[in-house]
Length: 226
Image 1 (cartoon, helix red, strand yellow):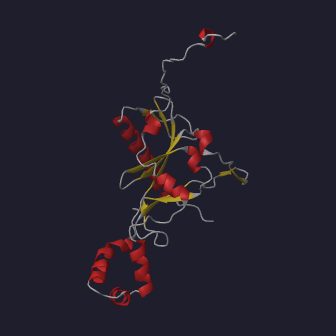
Image 2 (image 1 turned 90 degrees about the vertical axis):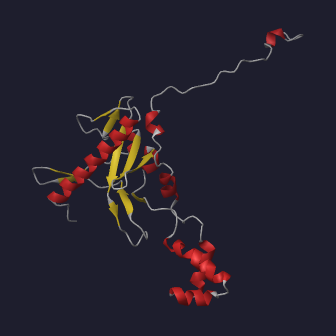
């Protein structure tokens, strides 16, 4: 398999650093400062409260086979190799996100979108396409299709107007407004967008409520012997 060129590697490095600085800026706005580790220990940023953050940054891409609109493509299980002067090449052992960080932030570069994800949610996932809206491309035509129905046009006539089979018209009218079918983990990842509290509240003591008991101690209950 052909590896990336020097230019591609530099571009990827710049994009990665841009994502890290964007995450640091977002946290600074929220009162949390970050630092960069002196050595690579599996995370990119360390907050003042000790939260280790891994940042994954992607640029928008058009993947027609997957979506009608541009998406951010994140890959999590890229194979890495070590090359020795002897010419021997060996694959580096993979570490899980749970082992190396406390939060993973997925950054959609152009739109400045952020998904703050628990590490365990990504471990075991090879890639995820993020960013598209939850509506289908064809839904922009639905109001007009419904107007045609109300004026008495048949589904066959509507199909002829749009260059579709009448069964497709029927399906689109039935599917309009319903959420896209998608892999469960992608839906869960999307729910993590802008969940900054996952990082902001890291390391804070958990508040517990103490209720004053109105129960009478057992030793005071008449007739009881301890």
